[in-house]
Picture (cartoon, rainbow, N blue to C red):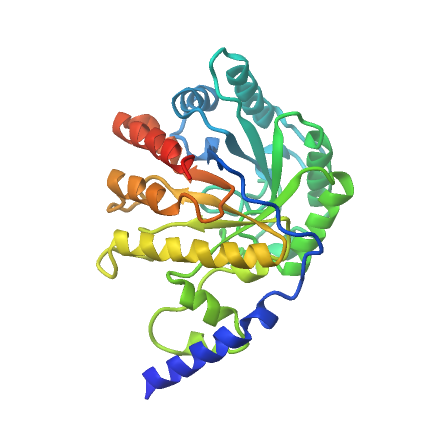
Length: 363
């Protein structure tokens, strides 16, 4: 009986999802996918071992991988050492490192994607200044309704809007998905707040595209069902649950950025193999590319798992190469590899990552 109910709900959700999941239609037609796509990586000083030289690490990765894009976080926690001051020296040095790389003869020119927001790259995903009092507040959105946060956002947007290396902005990181930090028990941001930040950015910069990211369910069938009007019912049924917010994130910027992970703490290998999960993610790319195109958006793979998840094993070099082979094409304009900081400790992973980048550029 339960199986029959699940089948019926899935069918209804598949029929009803277009109206419910995509309330905002884009006016302009979707841009054609870039051919060849741009391939690069995310880089964060927070992902390096304590005491590591971030500029040297980035320079090494730039030389080895020769990326088209580097995604860099502009952490509020770093930029705002005090409530009344802003210091961009760390991010400026990383940008300068890329400029030096680009000036070197024979280097592939790299551009940057700047991630701005308290929701940002690297665990715990919520990065707040030390001076911000969080003890008695349990919603991140409340902590961000401050003059200081608005100043950080607006100043950052204005500072880098005319940067020649800037390719795109990312507003927050997986903002609709839950995350927590200390006493902040609800780190998800409401859609209205994310839209307001995107509007603020567009009031300053109408030239560069805006990316909003999320992850998706283990299988696209769960995405479709969970985005439908009966999606709430799935939280009460046994078995796999819908995850992420791709349908909602799709409507917020110019570009949907999907984060694709196949072996994590929540997706152990004793449940499903990595190769099966890679195949499922490949199916998801086809589905979400079609939805993005219908709504005038581009599709990026904003985070492509390219090293083992923190504290886990099981994702291998072979899985990285298999992922690159499976995900290339599918109407994706940009692929950003995730976990490249770990490659610096392993020549084998660094070589595999370089190979994966080459494969992804091949349609």
